[in-house]
Image (cartoon, rainbow, N blue to C red):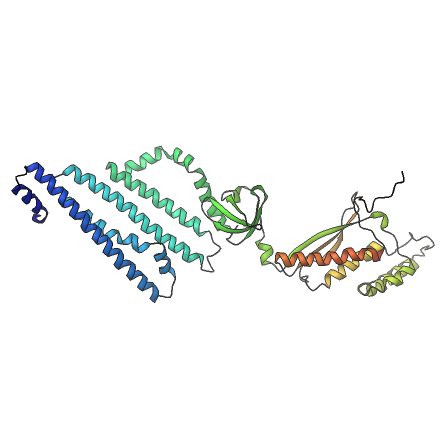
Length: 416
């Protein structure tokens, strides 16, 4: 093109040699191309960014807002000056064959990177958009985006090597096959994380927002992020624990989602009753126990059955152990059952019982097994404390004792 040779003619008129004029013309043309590319880049960024922002304000979706936040329009704007350089440089370097080949490879490689940046910004925008959608807010979107980006980087690396060394696709695939063992070793954690991410998603093991407990890593809190390599857990003390994604498959952990989605949160706690405080209840005491409203109807019904059995079987009641009898521990267990069953914060549709566990050297465990309707942690603790406050205070009304290790206040006095 004569337009690109204008400075050559000027340098020849100034008595430059052919070689000097040729190189001087090249420098001038490169400076002009760089200046035009800079102006095109500046104008295209201004026009595209303004156009994107104007378009985003008119639409109802927030996806285009995320495109702007992730600078997608800026990266796209870089394509215009890059394409200009790609098509004009062969003309500028028509007399420099080696330089033309080298420059074309450099521009091609930069274009590969630029396309990757554009795709990455679009994927990041998609990730941010899906995270605010109710149907996808608990899904490991980060893992999927990272997997796609790894695949794209692999293809980009192949394309760059093919461009740089001018080799065909079959040759590069053979080369990658030879070093596949090294690649697997280097990207072991990434591959394990990728497989784990797929299994976690397909099997619905963990979602963002789930409360999980993983004692091995000291994690006990809500999942705030799931990506290809790690799972971030915000513990209840506001610390953050990072757990390898593949450990969700290889190790054991507890997910509390079932409890959160159910109708209640389990209360499973016991008190220890001294075995030597358990005894039969005589007839005079039964009348006093009937004054406890939650037990009156039960005692009437139960005592009637006991007396009928003892009479029919001619039981000698001069010794209390003969026949069937009420015990203070049995009445206490029934009282706890009635009290918990009538508690307004207990879910009546789920299992509720007061059970007698295996006696131990520390006494007889009497356990309350029930579910609170309110699953919020602070309310759950308040409900459980309220129940056991009452239970502990009620023990003395049944002439029972709670086991405690000897202390200064309850240890027997030994005279020196």
